[in-house]
Length: 626
Image (cartoon, rainbow, N blue to C red):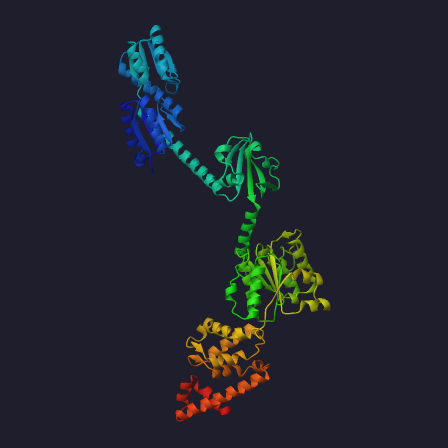
């Protein structure tokens, strides 16, 4: 640790004695002290340098100490002259006269007049306020018959000029020791207070809120960096000014009242005013300013961290596989609609990839950095779906979680809420959803206050909502609220030319299912294209996984596809007349290939199966059906 205490000695003997005391009493803390010898003129420059280097307390005596106190803004500890010090000075003289003067600065000779009564001598005090008073006061002492001056360095120097006998008061070890002890105590307290001050300054400066502090006279004392940006003023320019003159926006804010909404440079802030009291005495006020947009952003981040599940959209528009006219038209609409804030209704059969499209829209929108929350309205019963959507307060119903729970609307604040299978939503809940769309606020179950939410709604359904409106199973007003922007996702039958691309995609993305498989034959792809894929993309993904797991060779063949499809009646449910003929021709070609290969291998099933890239059992089963 660097030196904290500077000892300034007006003369060399005092400096040497101070070093002796430090060695004897502070041997384990020598590094805390720095001792220098300096007269009145030297002390000025030397002390300024020391304070710049971190000195926290200065120890000195007499006029030197008084001079330093006027020059620097650090605590000064005076070396007090004791009766023992004065007696020691008198002993040096030997036989002393009756008329004696004790001369020096007040911090040094205070209380010495009592010594005259003890010694039965005529003792006069010569009190100096500054060095300029020494000469005239010494001259007056001569006129008053003073024969001996006991004093500090400047007094001794002046008495010699006027021919008066003098002796220097030397500070003893006890005086120096007490002064150094006091200095160490002050330095430790000062450092502790400085630490608290720095901690408080760091808290204020690093706060995300604007902070303005005023004293009891309502003059500005603190303006942190955030407040400087809010008001576009520097702390140095406004410090000491009346807060009402500089920031009139704060004049209407009540003490310890509710947050007040104020507008500063076209931005909205909430402001709260709190009093600063020390032992019930008011010392001023603190104004706390929060940017509403920043509060909402922070709230969104907190909400996002509260639930990691379902808050991130992982798909982008580039992840949607397809180059058909129908697919490109769908993606073009999605890109345009993503740039708006309007509600979107996605229609399409099951398995067509509605959620992937919705996530892509979210990631293209200005809400991309906000949460993405999805809920399947068909997956939950009405009472549970309501609590999931709107949340609930503690005690709202039997089994409610302690502390309550945020609903999907709150979790999606600042982002997108995807309501999948909206056509399955019960009518009572439809009215609550309609109110959220109209008012942009929700009320949790069991709650008494509404919560404003900023959420974009994207709904999806595989049902005909217009027909449901006619039948009375879907609200007419909610349908028109949802059906502002609409995107229909085509089935695989409508985009059959995209099926080969999807097959290649799943072959790559599912490589870990069977790492040996590296390709698929054109015949196998053509065979798969002919199916109607009633389950759309979900069905073709499931089928590709099955084919990969059953394929024994490195390349998927027609035989592998047929092997995977033979136990799935649905695969052949809607094959047209042309498809049946083509499949029959392919089957005959396959049978001919199997028989020819087996004959060439002298009816060795193991070698024949290996050549064909299928399992021996599969070869045997195929030939058995011929």
